[in-house]
Image (cartoon, rainbow, N blue to C red; front, side, top):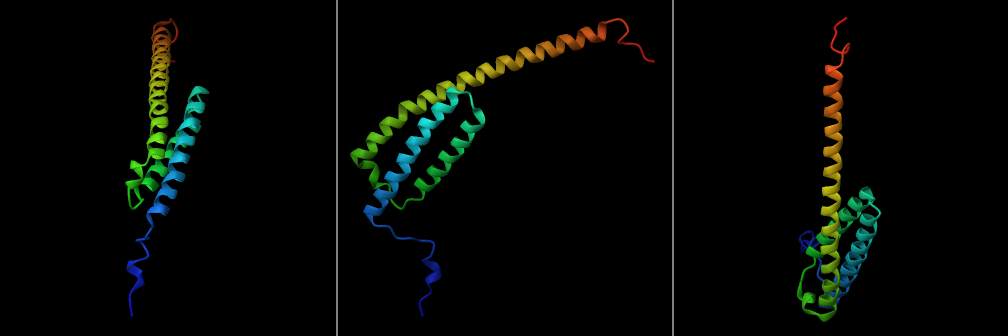
Length: 129
């Protein structure tokens, strides 16, 4: 009797099924990329990070496809050409947001340090009771 346990993990997909699955995954990836831009513009970083995680899950599914032959098709090249500038814009805005956050953090640290030094040097705050 043949053992079907070995075949349960290796699902055979026809080339047409691979193309259909890839199109669905890449279309979803493009949609999530548009959403990333929307949420980074709103500076909703929690939602932004959640969407990045969802996009990472799509990439894992794309990587699991049994063939990458679909990449040669014009419709997939067109999707990739739509994604590239969006990804560049997201990276630019994410870096700008990060730099702004760092500057704000440095200002707060400077303020905290200044207040702390002033408090320690003030009369009466150094006394031990």
